Image (tube, rainbow, N blue to C red; front, side, top):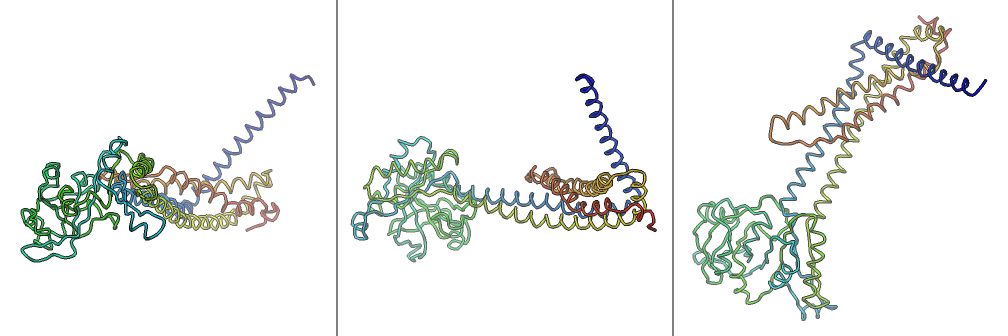
Length: 424
């Protein structure tokens, strides 16, 4: 046989084999559909387990993503773009740390602003321990902080009544104050009643011009307490007689700039102080990353729990397919008698198991997506949906059909045709 004829024969054989495979797949699909039409209720009940399991996976993933989004949004309201700088001590011994106290100063802010253009807000924080009195009565357990007007933007504070400190208050050394909402309620009976009220710090009168509150619970991440009074930093430093501050806050344009900016701020400040003094820059980026990891871990655990439902659905498919094989024993014997091979019989029953599982998976996916999508359509709230949850759900549904359909398919393929024909 010459090479040309050999090539033609090989091509013909490949075409014939491809056509046989296509006919086999078409025949398997036709027989599977005929079997489902004959037992519609059994098919529906068997697929129901996969519907529930797949919908559970989609919904669990959606709930996990929604919870993660909510938590991250809460943390972002703390001010994830902000950097808190504080003095952590210095000197090799305790005596040196006391003797060579080297705290932060307001000049450190000027140095950072001059060398780090990415800073959009900055504020010193000066904690005061002076006596506070209202009408001659001393108020205890009240925190007084000297801050700049930009402290409002750094901590995302809300001012429901009155106004916050402004640049005029700071530059003109106005004796004014903004008090926390809880302080106003407990001291004056409400926020509106607090506006215009006077109090004294070491005998110096101050007027309340506004009431503030946190935009979200900070879980102790800031220096603000329930009973807090904020006054202009320029006024607060006269009570201490020094430029020293407790903390300095800087806020960057974006969260991506925060890690590098934190290192640069420490370097700039360190260069202005003693070499053995230690300064720490703290950010919320680590908290944000940790919260995201915890949310992802919980979502993965919940998805594993939901996957158990798919496994239960797979057991149901195996039980039904085993009963189906037993009920169709004579059919299997007839097919083998007319020439059906071991492989063809196995593929037929395996295909039926996969079709049941995948059909339930598709319906479950549609139902699982319907709820979050309808919430986003009917309300202004956007519910995140992960495409990966759909891929995972359908992949697992197919795998369940293959895994739990293999035993019934193998049992059907191994049946003896003579014994099968005798089965009643």
